[in-house]
Length: 183
Image 1 (tube, one colour):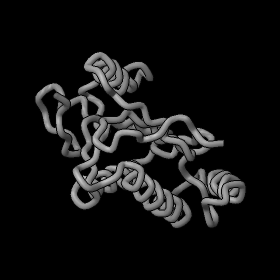
Image 2 (cartoon, rainbow, N blue to C red):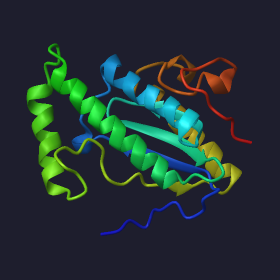
Image 3 (cartoon, rainbow, N blue to C red):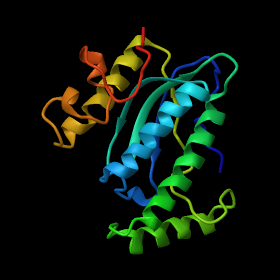
Image 4 (tube, one colour):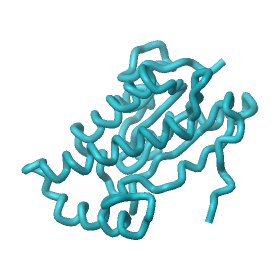
């Protein structure tokens, strides 16, 4: 069934969520978090992604994004999710220290078999649930929600102290990924 949530305006700014299937806590290990960070950076440098804000939690990531002129967000996210899913699953399979691989890999396979868009595995849930941020109120609400995720999850007391987030950028520091501030 098609989702009502789509990237309707190619010049719009969107809040999206990328969620691991079955909400598996993959991003508890730095090696997997770094793959997503590096892939977002590559998408900014080479694929036309404009990243305005982000946070990576243990099983999902929230992004506020738009695309440079001549690029499509749907294409950027498709490529990002395809690359990261293959790379992370390969890293899980080859990581001799990954104690969880014997139960994670079968779940990724189960979802991959069910989905005709995949060859073997499915890492990310299909839908990104894009919501166009068309007002300053919507932007402020999503920005606060995104940055306060680690605080609400009791990982940190202050949003800007969470490494895998753009909260530090919005308080005058420099985070892991280059962002373009929202107007």
